[in-house]
Image 1 (cartoon, rainbow, N blue to C red):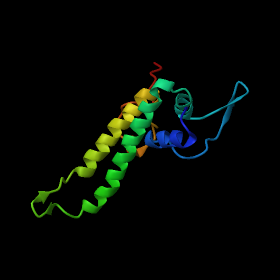
Image 2 (cartoon, rainbow, N blue to C red):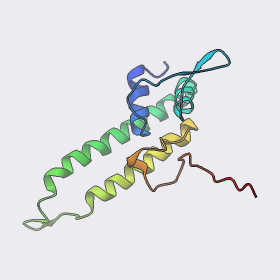
Image 3 (cartoon, rainbow, N blue to C red):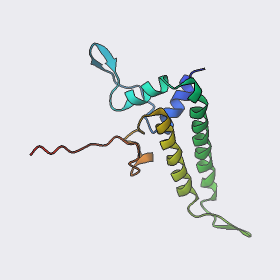
Image 4 (spheres, one colour):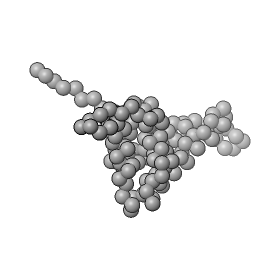
Length: 136
């Protein structure tokens, strides 16, 4: 069974793409998505049947990491609880793990993370970047 619209939206979200309808332009008489949206849209519609469970699994892992990030907010005020010492960098490590899985999702879909996503800022990874052209 192909990815549902809800699953596609979760994948887009985890790749950093905005949850907005895109302004379409016309190319060769056909509507075309702008920016890098066409890459992720095309990929989400062409996932091999044999890879669907992998994509769903990665999205689920990313959902779980995001839940752990939310839960970690309650622990930000404490550094110690009786004999239990809490990691001071818990949220940073979770964010790093989240990006790791995001790049895995981008790899399996063969598309970039959204280049303007703050979530992936500084990661370079699969992000589409501007390439300077030397004209002289």
